[in-house]
Length: 217
Image (cartoon, rainbow, N blue to C red; front, side, top):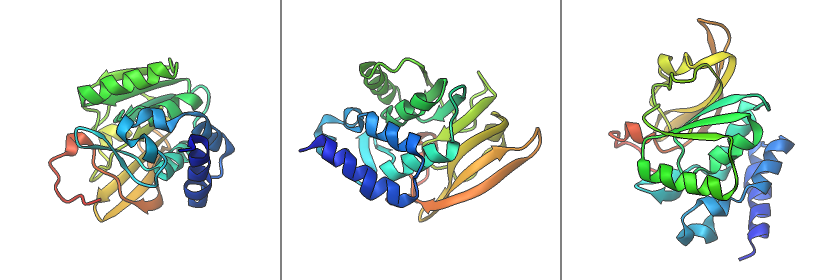
């Protein structure tokens, strides 16, 4: 398998056609080795247009979803980012490549350990990995300039929106299969948020919401 050709094809055939035109986002996707964040048995399909299993029943986001998330958040070099659901650590690495600091919270201790190994192998140091359930927010170091929610939620908790800095952005997929909507939420002031629909999609629910049985991928 030609890894670099597969990476190029992923960007040109999956990511760009999904209206991802931000060159910084494209450059980081080209630079960070996605194949190093998937289970070894799935390395040959690391660039496929599908959600890959990463263990314990959890799925890695599709490449085009990850790219749209990054583009929507429009991260700045000084940003502090909250990631809810570390997963494989690949999106964590992408976020860390654009922001000053990423606090990533994962409920599954085995996935968290794997992500820690993946990130350390890539020399990514501006990430703090924490075990816990952040589906309704993570107050420890709020407010955050950006929040990335890597699993779908049936609705957006107010407590999560209140974790955002004024002017902060959050990417979240809301709804239940088969109708889900990716949203960009921006905090306008202390009491107001703007919710902008981005695109329709499907995304597995956060593990903390695993009681739902209506998701079919």
